[in-house]
Length: 228
Image (cartoon, rainbow, N blue to C red; front, side):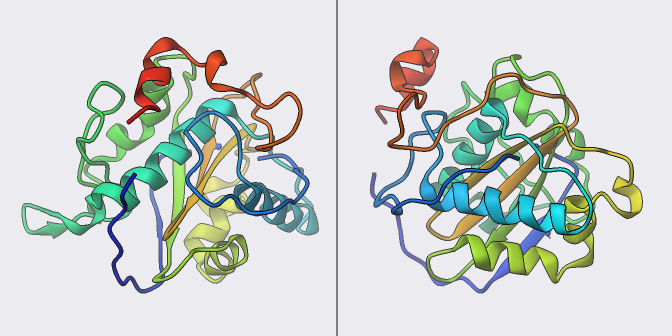
């Protein structure tokens, strides 16, 4: 998969879309993880750091969700390949919660703008991409970097932003959420976390470990898409 390089300044973004656990750390993956197969070492590190931050603030770790991670991994690839966050709609800039028309069989394209006009469309992404397997709303926090994004940089960016910190620590309008599920996506310039309101009994393993979810375990449509 050929990815276009471009210069980006660090950005963080939050909206009304959502989905955490502890993983061991291992050598970073050289290429992108096929969405839904496993969690890369850097994605696992982000989950670990974020959950440690929650525990330090008196909150329980959030279990990692298969469906929400599937959404997160697709989104970071879409952002890197198709750049839906560079467009405009009715004179308003599309932000990092936007999605291209890359895979219309999986999700609806949308330009997410600062007025949150497309919030409901965003909340629905876990239902769309999981083909109804995940029924809860999803809420996303996103971060981008001009170079290779790291787990440490993404978490530090969110910690320094009050709206993002409130989502992670269930403060302000997010008080009492007690997030039961979380998904992660991290690749090249982007990192995202999706928090969900509904528990997900199916988790996802670290890439390269015994028992990791393989391509043969995916629905046929996903097996075909991963050959793109």
